[in-house]
Image 1 (cartoon, helix red, strand yellow):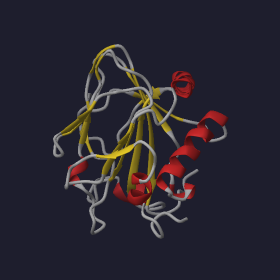
Image 2 (cartoon, helix red, strand yellow):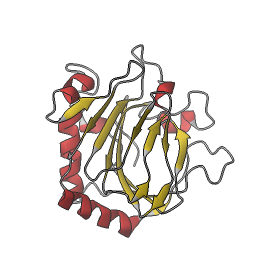
Image 3 (cartoon, one colour):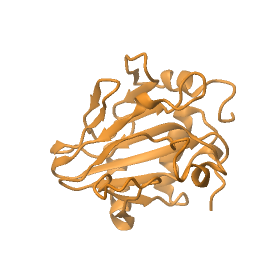
Image 4 (cartoon, one colour):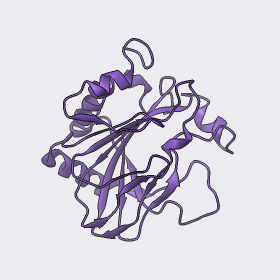
Amino acid sequence: MTSHDSESPSVRIRSFAGVQKVPTPKAEIFQCRRFLDPSLCRKIVDLIDRERRPSTLADPNGDEYFRTSETCDLDSGDSIVRMVESKLDALTGIDPAYGEPLQGQRYEVGQEFKPHTDFFTPDGEDYDRYCSVAGQRTWTCMIYLNDVEAGGATRFRELKKTFQPEAGKLLAWNNRTTDGGVNEATLHHGMKVRKGLKYVLTKWYREKPWGWE
């Protein structure tokens, strides 16, 4: 199956056991509790802790506190990473060639990712740089890897929905509108952790095969 023909990702995701469609007309967004089992989550947390580095922004906006987490790109050659990738590919039905490398994020107390979208702003400073090879981002799959003692929720303000971190829970959403444009309603806020740590796993898919080294 290619990225955007045959069965659509939204139809495929909806048919996956345990998936719930979030009731909103503004965006296609789904959640699935216990998508990953706790032991696998813990193994990924260990990988993130070994490789983490300060997170960056595609389009810096002058706010040095806009994204204060740590990030790591996970090695696709690792058997644990391959297991997660395969599960996400089965969920979405999107050809793996269209996927960015799996990325992990770690948030300490006080760290956050202020309201942002996952797509690249069409008139943004670095749009051509990030979209010239593989095109715009289409779908996002995000998995919470641990329960957070306090804070760390993901808030979609336009959708009036807030999701609490829960080990193994997946959120998946379409960053585009039905006409293929970007969906501003997918604006979301990785809210500040108030107590403990927060670990997240993110997979983004593109319009074209991923061609970056």
